[in-house]
Amino acid sequence: MLAKGFERQLKDGVLRVGDRLPSVRRLREQQRISVATAVSCYVWLERQGYIRARPRSGFFVSRLPSPDGPDPSVARRPKGPVPVGPVSIGAETSSVGERQEVVQLGPAVIGPALLPMHRLNRSIRLALSAFTDNAVRYEDPRGSPRLRRQIARLVFRQGSNCSPDDVLVTSGETEATNLAVRAVTEPGDVVAVESPGCYEFLQALSTYRLRAVEIPHVRREGIDLNLLSIAVRKHRLKAILVTATCNNALGDCASDESKAATVAFATKHGVPIIEGDPFGDLVFSGERPRPLKAFDKTGMVIQCSSLAHYVAPGFNLGWICAGRFQADVERLKLSANVASARLPQLAMAEFLESGAYDKHVKRLRFALWQSVEASRQEILRTFPKGTRVSRPEGGFVLWVQLPEEYDGLELQRKAAAAGVSILPGSLFSTTKQYDHCIRIACGHPFEVLRPALGKLAKLLLSLDRPR
Image (spheres, rainbow, N blue to C red):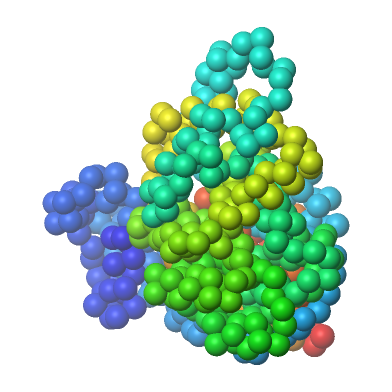
């Protein structure tokens, strides 16, 4: 992206404080871009504090980027198996979520300002007009045929072959994950999870009384296969739970080679993979990485995904493609809640059919990149010395490693009282390995995020005692 190129020039010393940048018109001609894109580039650079506009003079460099510093550290050795205890986002976060003035940086959900509200309202109206006297009947337990067709098209664009019959619509990715876990495990079984890993995975494991072995996550490679092979030999693993595209804490994407190797490993050992894939369409480069499911030839990968995080949270729609476990998943869905609500499915089907989804994601991807990058720099600039921040390739969450004397859970409680919700790092581990970390969701414009990050910085300065 153009703004990222300017930032790289600032870091490399090509541009220095006081240098004048091309005018918007000149930049448009040089880069062969639209005026809107040129203006957006300069707006982002200005929000970072990198440049200043001088009346009738143009844009000038005002500040150089802060050093990024090292990446957050992760676990180095497997831990477990241990029973997965109750996983809660905290009473403070739950209670303050009902107050309108609270800035939600905890749940990974896009704020209303970045959602296609007008277009979604139109989809709902069109869905209502399509209703007949069958409106009060249950939907097909597998989901609306219209929506399943559209999801199958999305999955095909990701690199997987999938028919509508291979898709089961769920009430969000959480239900999809729960169905997958129930389909392949029994209480007391041992499963492997990434460290750090998605706390929604751990919630599902806790609900069904499973034991977990934490396997370190390797940047750009995903779950550590060397350590996973040791775990397979020592324990009878019944499943592997991973998020290989935009890891849901660190935000990096495993390479295609690593994904293929992971699927081959699971196939060889007969251990199903439960793949979370909430942010794959939000990779900043615009090139949608292939999921693990794209490398699956034997049906061992169960893909769980959702449109709730970044299209329509209130619709709460997700899906699961369960491969050889599809029949078990459909049976469990029927016994759990018969079917997901019909109206949101028809509205989402219309939204996808119209092409509105592609337009929304294209705009959203750029907006989120702006928010994430601006928030990274703000954290590095204002948080205590020694703070490390992830460099996500997509999605909209930041993993923040604080100096070890800070307690993420204590910060969560104090932030909630100050009107800011965050998630402590302890939620992302079965063995509480990340007590001094927090996860921040950047699903709002930076002008909303900046005051909230300022509050967190001030709170951290007040937490000056060792744990």
